[in-house]
Amino acid sequence: MPKGGNREGKTSRRKLEVAERRRKVIELRLAGLKYREIFERYPDLGYRSVSAIAQDVTRALDQFVGEPVRELVAVEMARLERLNQALWPRAMQGDLQAIATGVRLSESRRKLSGLDAADRAGTDQSEVDAYLDHIAGTAPASMLDDELIHDNDNEAGDA
Image 1: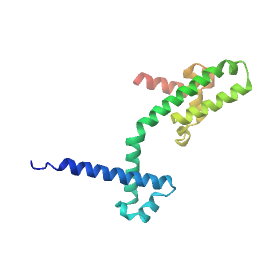
Image 2: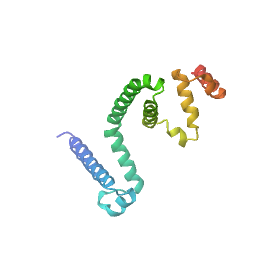
Image 3: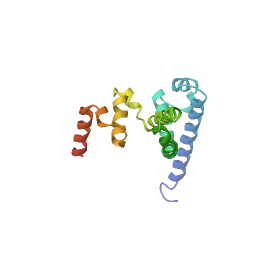
Image 4: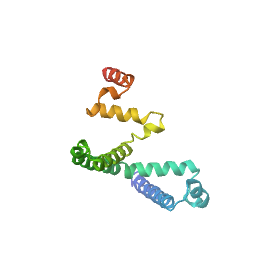
């Protein structure tokens, strides 16, 4: 047998062990345990720290969930857009129920796309909404802060 010929077996076994450990930790998280509780109650999992558990869970989710989640977000965004397009004519005619539903659809799209994170970052959401409406051509430029428009125009020219 060539030198190092058993490496594939060790690597495969190690990958299986890591996958199994990650599965257990994710199950424990789904059961409501915090990382610290997992670390303290399950030393047999072999983690050296609470942050190592968090990193392992993040890696597992990135590996197995990342792409499917992006696909699901894209499908959901398309659904929301189709619903919005169907409601739009009624909303533009002043149908209050269609307007309210359109607002809820917009809120769902913002959450899904991460635009609501702008609030947490200190950006005024009304400025973001007004700018997006301006880009879409659905709001008069007078609704926008001139500085916001010109700043973005300058960024577009720099790109």
